[in-house]
Length: 301
Image 1 (tube, rainbow, N blue to C red):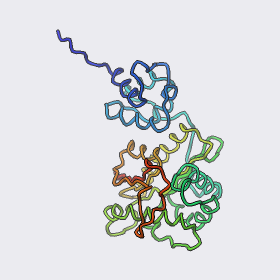
Image 2 (cartoon, rainbow, N blue to C red; image 1 turned 135 degrees about the vertical axis):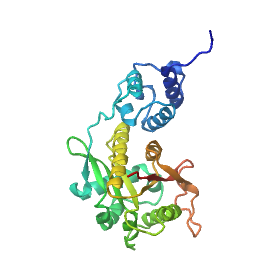
Image 3 (cartoon, rainbow, N blue to C red; image 1 turned 180 degrees about the vertical axis):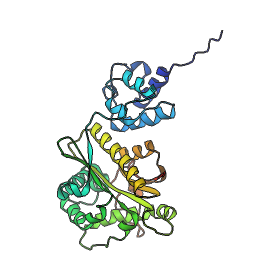
Image 4 (cartoon, helix red, strand yellow; image 1 turned 90 degrees about the vertical axis):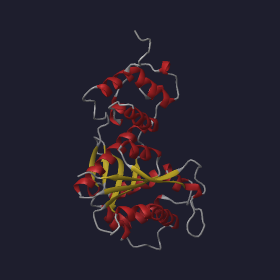
């Protein structure tokens, strides 16, 4: 008889969760949920990725809905797990929501949550709105909003054919920092875009341009909304005949969701060290750990 100890599935499960949270396995209480043990929107995604690598069939949605670690474990090991979240969100086409409300949500989201704008550029909501009015029509075909049961706007996703974005004419009245951001995005993605669409044809690359969330959302609601957005954009790209989606992610949440959903990371750029061709560093005020990732999803038809 062998004395070798084979860890149980529960042991493997709790080891991954404990490692993600930085706590001992003995601290995992089956009756507690992930958030009660110190989990948040970012390490939920990290835990999902690690559990999937360990062979557990678990989703972000299961984490959001499970009332306890025991229920999460059972759903992760079942043939058919929970696949819908407890937040009742739905999608609306961009043309079916109030444009000013959607634009304001995006502006406030970026000004408060993105270091590219919160720590750099001295922009205001009005600066965003001026630019959005000029560009809004270019996003009409593939963009949408997330709303709750009361039809309240919870998030907005702007997406467009990469070729259509390239055709938007520059406007000298647009805030200079906004233009600096887009110049940077164009520079860091140029090689990838050329590789994905060397002949510059339409419906080759769907650009996931901007995601913004309501400042009233909880962290868990943001995970739910952005997971819904990412999956919908994959379906949109498939139905639209695109070969790839590309995103320049500046949010740790969307960066982790991109990995969770199987995107390939083409580049990671530390923002406070990035310099434009003239040697200027417009994002020098960003934190040392603040980065942009270029993430590509290959559409399977």
